[in-house]
Length: 418
Image 1 (tube, rainbow, N blue to C red):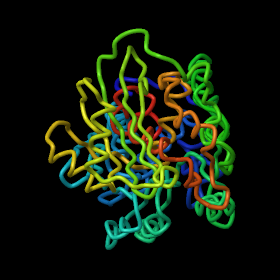
Image 2: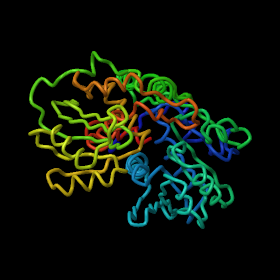
Image 3: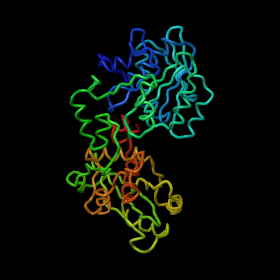
Image 4: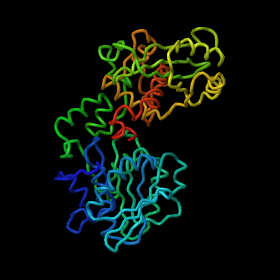
C-alpha cells in the first residue's frame, strides 16, 4: 500500500470503520464479521477500525492481531497498516523479536501483540494473556481451539472482536457458529463484494474475475460459502495449457511425488518468458507394472529424465526422506523438500492455469490424464481432493508452491495464503 491515499470509502467500508462509534446504531454489538470477495477492502478498513476503537476506549491495554501465521499477518495486515496509521498521527514502534507493536497517540499508549493460529497447538501461545480486544485476519483458516482461546483472553470490560475472512466450505465451524448465529452472538455481519472497494477500477475487477472459475469464483468473487464439487481444475484447457516453448528455456526444476506402492510421478520444468513448461515427465505405477522400485532405481530414472539439463533443484515430497537422502548422497543435484499446503497449492496452480502461465507438453500423458480425473471429495466437511489420480497433480502442486510461489505473481502475495 505504501503511500496510498484514501480519497473515499464505500458505505459498507464506512460502516466497518465506524460501527463502534457513539453515533452508530451498531455500537452495542460485541463483534463485527466482514466476509466476502477478495480485494473488497474489508481487511484494511477493519484494521484501521480496530486501532481507532482501541484508542477510543482504552489506554495502556494489550490487544491482539491474529493471522494464520505471523508472517502472513505481517504481510497482509501490518505492513499495509502502519504507514496509514502514521499518516493519521499515530506513532508505531515495532518490536519484531517480541511480535509486538507499541502504538501511541499523544499521551495515550496501547500494545498490540501478533499471533499465528496455524494449528491446534497454537492455542497455547495466547494462554494467560488479558486482552481488550482481538482482530482475526482470515479467521476461517484458523482452528477453532485457537480462536476460542483468544476470545477467552478478552476479559477487559467493553472488549470487542473483529473478524474478517474469505468464504470456505458451508460446513466450516466459523460459518455455522458465528455467521449463522450473528444475532445470538450480538455481532454485526457485513458481506463485501469487489464493488464495495472504490479503489478498484472496473478493469482491475474484471481481471480478478477472469482469474477464477467454479468454486473459487463463487467464493473469491461472489463471496459465497459453497462446497467444492466436481473437477478440482475445471478450467484446464488443452488450447491454452498444452504446448511447447518457442525457444530454449532459461531455468529448470524437477518436482517429485514419491511412491513405492503408490505411483511415483516426476516432472521436468523449464521457464520460457513468463511461462513454466512441463517439458517431460516420468510416471511409475507399481501396481500396474507389477513390481516396485528402490530409491536407487528411482534415482537412475530421475537422471534419465533430467538428461543434460542444468537443474536448479529437485523438489521432493517432504515425506520421502529416504529418497531425498539418496539424492543428496550422490551429490549431483540440490534437493529441496516441497511446500505441502494442499489448499494453498491448489489455489496457486489454479491461478497459473487461468493466467496461461502453466503449460504441459503433449508428451506428458499422465498429467493430462489426471487433470480430467482429479476431483473434490464431497464426503468431507473440509475441502479435500479424492486421493486417487493425484500423483502428477501432487508433484505439479509441489513445483508451483515451492519453485514458483510468490516470485512469479504478485497476485499470490495479495490473496492466496488466505
